[in-house]
Length: 454
Image 1: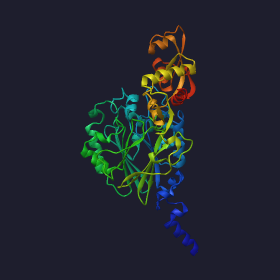
Image 2: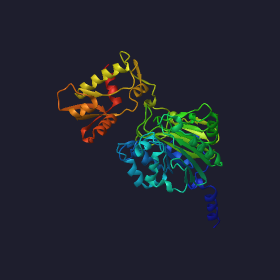
Image 3: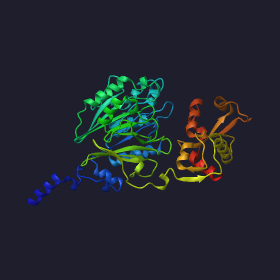
Image 4: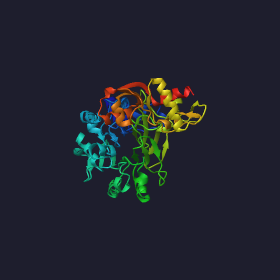
């Protein structure tokens, strides 16, 4: 009997040994793999943005994120907007309506993509609030909406912890800041922040899509200081590029400010990914990582994509692992015979593609030229989104509507073009996707093939 009583005491007061509690002490050097981080955390959750209507059905990266979150037992996911896209397939909507986990645990923000999809255009301020109807979000008891029905404050309880989420509507259109980020939204943000009685186990997150990739600088210095001092995590989106932002009015203990990247359409050398936040106790902190969903498995990230914010304390990067060779974006991977301007590169690359694909019409549209020495980062400057290339077959009259009259006397014309641009052409002409043929090559791979021949 004494042994049974002793065992019960051990269970009650040292539950971590038996796996019933995650509130014990932890150290960074205990974290060798992402499963260690899951186990040592009190709970964890995810953040994503800019999926433009895609879901697990349409994009592999989104499918991975969905599986990884559920397998890891992420408790909820925050959205930073542009979750739908006008005239695109938008299988995201039936997905969130039909998936029980997402219906219960998705906390979206609305942005210009939602305004355009549900309203008259990207600058139709607040029209995107109809997204909340898709999952009956207005009826969530822990979500408190403003009268405008597009900005809200949510209290997300996790045991004895509370995540306080404030979502502000700040689309990147119109360009007039007074309309996109109005005074009453800013006052609402400050008033809501001040109303939160922050204890040791409260985490405050503020999200807004933004116009330039970071909205905090659009506040007055006085308001910046209030937000940076009270919040723990400040989230922006729109640029599709994950990075830490350090506002001018930051102090050592200010909030961690991030751009959340994009799960399906990242920009530059940023991979397809999402943010995962692990809440830690003893010491209290949040560990934030941008999880690369281009990979086959979820894992700890390198220094660039791993940060820690001690609650009411400092922010620093974490060295969970060294960078791999393909993560060193400054590495020189090719040396050309000459420097190429944007125009020279476009002509030479197009000539190369015409021969490779046996076509007379190529639309590659590089964004920059190349120096003689070419790094991985330089390639991303040429094609920031690394779109797949496809064959697009058009009748001569269809081609003429968009590109002007062809110098070829042919009824059917063959184009090599990015899948993004090809989808635009199909939408404009009202054509079906059977006109497109996947070439099994992306812009970067074509550019690397071209470099080998220079």
